[in-house]
Length: 161
Image: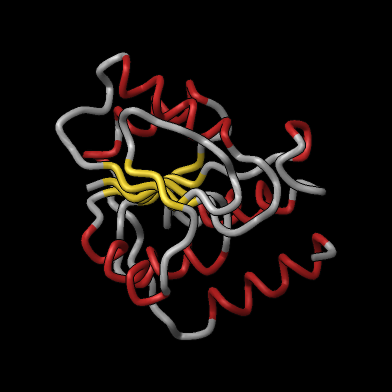
């Protein structure tokens, strides 16, 4: 099962959902259930099970069951996936597409990608490449010893977030 999570932002993020639909339509993603938590984004897909929000318990259950997580760069979702060492592709909301007020999600995604916890895609072609190579990607093991948290805090301060 693939879990797609857009978070709860009021900004539209149908760009990611259209990209996934295109990859399904073109046969790159097949033979799997895709559950998409789409928050405030209005989107109708013939391929994905889309729902606005679910309980925290249900979300955690879906994260546990997922073979792959594709998500915006919300730290909560990223940390949930890292704790379970889930293969995760981050597709950050970008200011240039009016998906957020700034590009802090891109900075967060780059940080976790550089640490090899997840893969980063910013457009459909990059998402396609990540999915094509997901079987060979082994996420780095998250060790909750505080070092990654301290490094992330430093980065957030550096970025003014």
